[in-house]
Amino acid sequence: MPDTENLRAQLHELRQEHRDLDAAISALQENPAGDRLQLQRLKKKKLRLRDEIVRLEDVIYPDIIA
Image 1 (cartoon, helix red, strand yellow):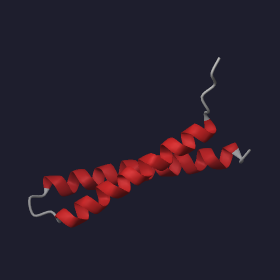
Image 2 (cartoon, rainbow, N blue to C red):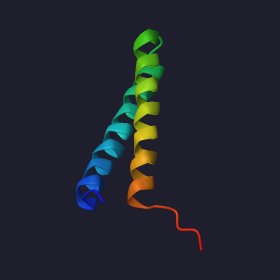
Image 3 (cartoon, helix red, strand yellow):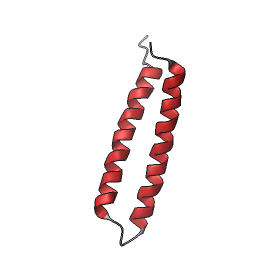
Image 4 (tube, rainbow, N blue to C red):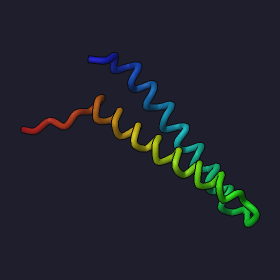
């Protein structure tokens, strides 16, 4: 099994990056002259990060069927 502490640290970093992207996306959306292409790229990156976060959470906290 992979080192859980390393996975938790990686998960923490991904969550922080996800929050940072959320703030950047909000700032771009508030600016009427915002770059639409940049906004799309940030949103796609945020979705990829979310997928990676979910994957890591599944590895760290597996579902146990009783």
